[in-house]
Length: 214
Image 1: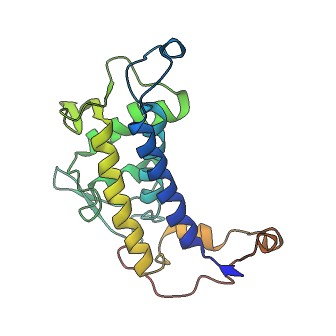
Image 2: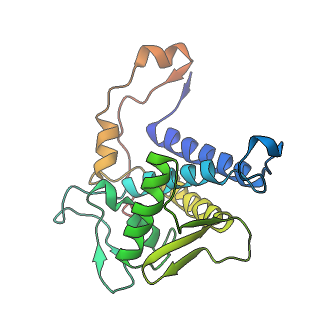
Image 3: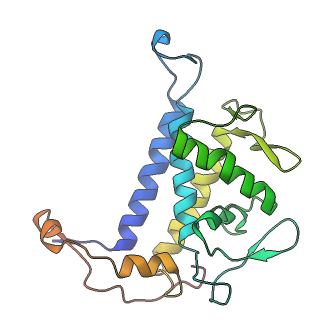
């Protein structure tokens, strides 16, 4: 039977997500009578998927407390912060080896509240906030610390490249034991009988080398 690990499943899920978001942004809407905004691509589902990828990558750098060992994310104000709570996952956008966006805490918090949460939970973004799909717009368009526009194609490129770097980290080593989400995965209950029926042998443990970057 083919043996897969939790790490393999994470990589597969990320790769599938990026693949589908790219298809969404390459697909022009057809049958204009069906759509309120007929001229464009499938930007909303693409953005939901991309936010999910960023969210999930950030979760693998989350630690239990400020005192826990873990990477400190640099911000444009010169401060460094750890990812401790789920709402901190988007701090990963400033990780210098993954996305390196060099945003302020206020800018990331606004992106999270106005875009990620609204589109994920309400299928909408606030009035005065926009999605661009033309390549001549910048990646993020801020007015002060308020994010008023995201370039979908450039954001897809950013997340795709960062996700590739992250999955490369996973290929080179298992998740660090200090990582909160990795611990949840290791302690989760998996249905051995169900997966065996599919010809998949689940890992009996999660032993192996760790990657200090995680």
